[in-house]
Image (cartoon, rainbow, N blue to C red; front, side, top):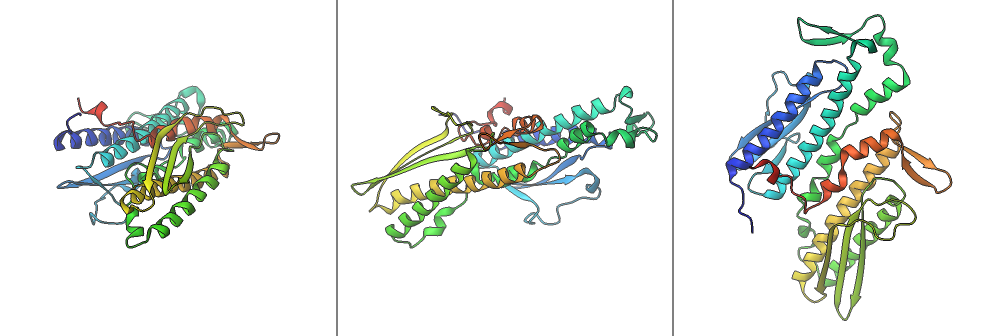
Length: 324
């Protein structure tokens, strides 16, 4: 079993990634055409509090309260929380690098949109051709894609890697009551799966529940395989949990896993609805013959950059890569 990294190493790895993200966005800001963001943070003992802001709003910025609703707390002593934060910042970095790359392309002199000011080391809109070129369909798509908000997606997915204390919901409940809640949650997960299987690129949980001789078995895994002819889907977070109906401690384990899968399924369904309805850029198109929602070119790039399935993978740590 590997030794747990020291506090100083974990803090150092996290702050290095935050600095990398802020540096990229500082560069993006020079182009005055894309949204750029900054992560601010404070450390208090074992807690790291962070917020994400538009760079236009970061002057005289301070965390007025470490426990403010806007800030997110990470317990440095808990590796799953640090791993979630590292995964999240890495996705932010990937998205920012995409924006920076597109900004550099649009800033090239032959494009005619931006003009470089050597005194301020920034770019400004070409007054003669910039406004007209910005309204062209392809340029609008490029800009809209870089402004796609990924922050709320990964913030809402925090429960996927960290989890909530769902067991508090069943304190004092009888085994029958817990079983009823488990079955209700499983029904919701399955309903989500039937909807999400029709939408390309969005992960979903496939679950199964059996009850025999007072023993229940709950099996679960996540996948994003898409299409009508899936035989052996890719599986992550695969688990099989058995429990005796008469043992509350066993039922607690099943309940905690089911509720976690339910929360992620709900987040995925909300995400799918948001992305399918998005028109600028349009990420999905309905295939009339199959009635499946397939990714457009812009959608395929967006989903690839989000890389949600790897983000959900509890077995994939992004901490170890930055500790050596």
